[in-house]
Length: 293
Image (cartoon, rainbow, N blue to C red; front, side):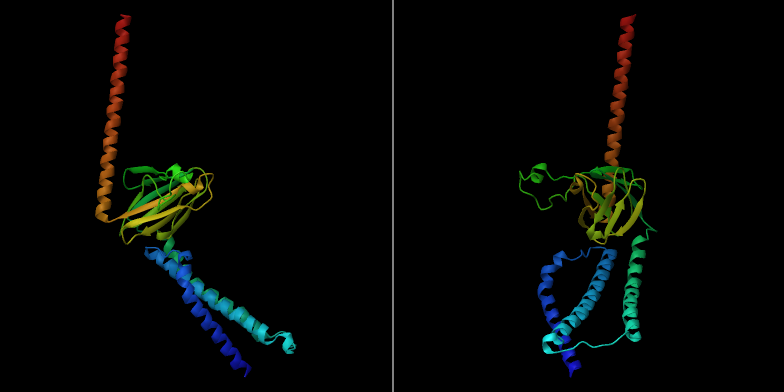
């Protein structure tokens, strides 16, 4: 009779928790881990949810059993505590069961971690360097190099103007990446510890001075993906966002060509400016020499 009562109580508790979880799920979802848009990010999210549900089941069973025992076997009902000593079988069960659960979790977790660290076979490489307080992006396979700085106006930061939708998550130059290509990202720092973090791409890695970390991503669809520095790095730590714009391979190649043309024009302008300076110096020297004669 007691066993039937215990089973009915646990079943009722599980049913109530299921109904409650369905009602509040829509409200707590924004506070859950970001699912992301890449295959790796979805694997990480799925692993997170599996472990979350395992923890929920363990919590319901443990605290449910405690609550039922406290209510049913309370002193006011005249229940006297049982007198028993060690149980070898019980000790074995509550030692082996957590071990089995941890092994079951570790196998899929190890597979995801190995996949996240496998940067081999990349189609392109981008080097990310953290500075106080900005990011520098260098495209190793192309002659493209620029700094990315916070674009949010100071008037918004100091509450002199209304804050826009992407407040503190907008930059003057975005990191442009192609879709459908494996991208290796090298991450380091020029001064202090930073952390380059883009939740939608499941990318988060420390930027360490004198050391290069590496991650990779494969973006399936175009879009804008925002992140920020995730390591307290000084006074303006909150003012160094990350904005990655994913383009189709064709649009990305066009962007690379455009950047190359800009660099070429800039180089030609620099050469012309240098040439003009040389001419001016020579003219000054000739004038000085004529005056001396």
